[in-house]
Length: 291
Image (cartoon, one colour):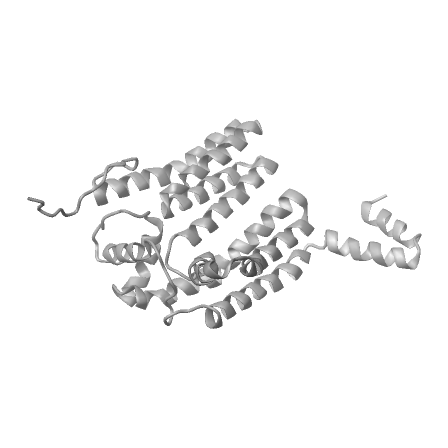
């Protein structure tokens, strides 16, 4: 007897209440479009709460939120690339190349380019991160765990606000959360999203043993390394997982997919700063006469 007919026979022989419960469970479990019934509202909810936070609950100057770090390096590097020059390459290469078209319109001032950068992160990367959290959790423990993980991913940054003492409240709300939500030009947020994508495809590879999934894992990890070279530490996790899962071929495929990013990073560093990727020496740009 076909599976669908067998399940209909089972449903017909149950009490009305139990039949209703099983019918609902059937739709929740086997409906092909079911995840989007939950995920689409979660994406919209994330846009609403993060948008409300950005507009009403944190200090800002137009599109400029507090940014501490290397955000101007990414944009300035992009502007120089747009002019055909290779800048000093103290940051990765992915974001400068990604931002280059923005500089064609906005020019050299990062304040003019911030709207495009923040809208891209808000409209594309923010929901992508949410979907990756769902996908990772769902592959580990099923759809219900995925929904809870996605919901907590949205809520926890706000639910933890009351847990901080008053003297740290401003540091967390004004300085930390804008970076967590991708409201700055720093590389940390897109870097995190790239690592999540790589982690998702790594889990897929472990389950499917499919070569395209291993390639996708390596390419995503390469993008993460291109944004922030320190993400190279992540490479060891998928590599070890594939080896322990007795997938040596996919481990080699994954490593091979990462190699182009490492080669590009090496060339980027050598051409832009004349230093090795692993160099630890301090570079002195100027020195004062102490005599």
